[in-house]
Length: 397
Image (tube, rainbow, N blue to C red; front, side, top):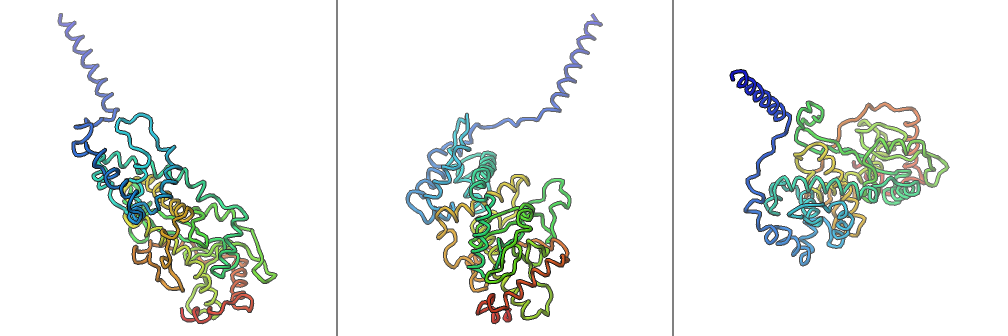
């Protein structure tokens, strides 16, 4: 009898050990107190989507634009593009794609907390988190191939013509800059995301065209496509490569044109720096519009780095979408950007500029790069390349 009891005890002990091992390796699921919190029970009637958003969409276009950064027509177009990727299989309390998009646009455009969205839409916080991250990824996946696609050779040439026509800079196919997007320090990241401003951030590196449209957000791809392509400087028989214009943070390359450094520059070099600055101002304005319209970028974003990347990519492609799809006059109205070489754009009163990246390399460059810059410098001070106001403004600066 004693042997039988001992065997039973050993067997029970073994089962306990196996059960404990299984328990340790298994994630503990939190027991939900409610299937739906009592304060959210009236969501279908009193939630923000039905009680406020839909009436605003039907009757108040001004407030609707502030909320979504879009006209009703453009918003409906966005919903049609995204809805196929946002329809779920089995959800007892189904949330329609339009409501998901409305939640996400509110988060991105106003920078409100997800908890505030959860209260106003009468949803769980986890649900709102899931919706925002899902929609941001879908926005990029669906819109990027249409609104941030790689330009063709003909489109590059058109960008160059626009920069020369609008900003008097030849063979320019973009204005380039990098900005810090502040984030909460990721767990176990050490100094990986710690920048020279002593904050944690990721860097958004982008180039734009002469009409405030982002063209590329990856400088590596850009350099491999632009290097080696030449064209004549207008009204001359001199050929130079196509290039982007950038500030002193970037190196001088055949495909990156930066200003002359130093304080005691000749008049010709000061004119060159002024002309380059006029063209480079496009990227400053583009980033300014982006941050003023999508205020999530003004804040320290609290999320996993992968989700933050998706949010930033989403607002970049939404910026292009809004400018290209018919709400340009509301999204970027007259007076919204800097003019007459002054920092007088309305976006500056709505948001502070993002912090620019620090120096990305040394100032050394190959001889041919210096020669190309000197050719453009001489062209700007020649009879065929000068503009009437450049001396006064360059010397004033």
